[in-house]
Amino acid sequence: MNSEVIEGLKELVPEKDIIIDELMSRHTTFRTGGPASLFLRPEDEEGALKAVRYLRQKGQPFFILGNGSNLLVSDKGYHGVIISLENLNDLRIEDDTAVVAEAGVLNSAIASLARDNSLSGFEFAAGIPGTIGGAMIMNAGAYGGEMKDITESVRVISPDGGIDIIPGSDCGFGYRTSALKRGGFVVTSAKLKLSKGDSEAIAATMKELALKRKEKQPLEYPSAGSTFKRPEGHFAGKLIEDAGLRGFTVGGAQVSEKHCGFVINKDNATSADIYNLILEVKKRVFAASGVTLEPEVIMLGDF
Image 1 (cartoon, rainbow, N blue to C red):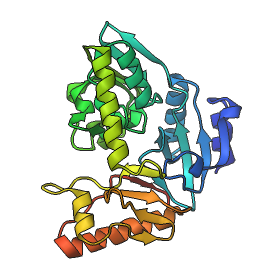
Image 2: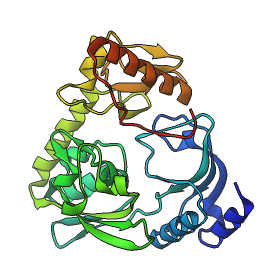
Image 3: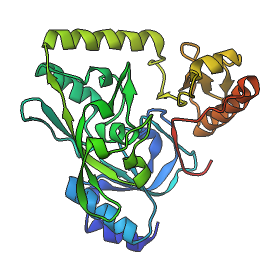
Image 4: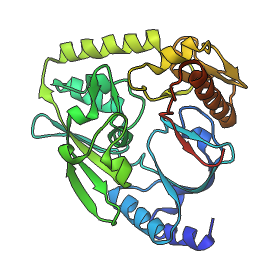
């Protein structure tokens, strides 16, 4: 990493929040990944804005990190700057039924706040293991709900370096994508429009969905959730199972025996194990069905 870039960042981000060669295995739910050249934790939106502007000005590659729940980082690491938004964690209720959450707030925390304040509409996302910033970028969804259904507006750092507020209707939400993702926007907070409900009924729904997850998903192992996007007209897990790949392993990585749509870190897997397993699954599923699976997981670094 260029020493000039590091010195410039020290003027924008507290030195204690600038880490050189930080292992990304500490910051991904796969629990794999080599070192990032530089790891930043801006204290607030202004700090994030200044860092993004500076890095764009310098032509320095960077990646915005939430909870690392949809990310596979190369064992060789990432030769750029990771900007973690973990310090952007303000969470509050506005206008009686709206929840405003900064990008680093976990979806589980939003769900708990909504439940405790008798606000319904976020139950589906209670078990999505990520932050609201990442959820907005990829239009996260589960059990029939999606972020597009409840997003009133999103506050972003725009490609031109300004702060903008984008109405939910203009976010271009699609299946596991958005105009935010396609346009290179950095989400700093989101305003969610929920509705008044019964806290006991909300809690019961959250409990029911949590039990479904536990029964059907390999939550006991590190993973990045569903590894592949759902192909049109198919289910990824079913295609993988039909190709005879239930329990298939490469090194310490495995196609979950509990749910074939999940690739898990079964036994001290490396990122290379996971990556090569994904490639092999794609190859064999295509040979068996003619369907090309597209990973939902973001790959970062050189594989």
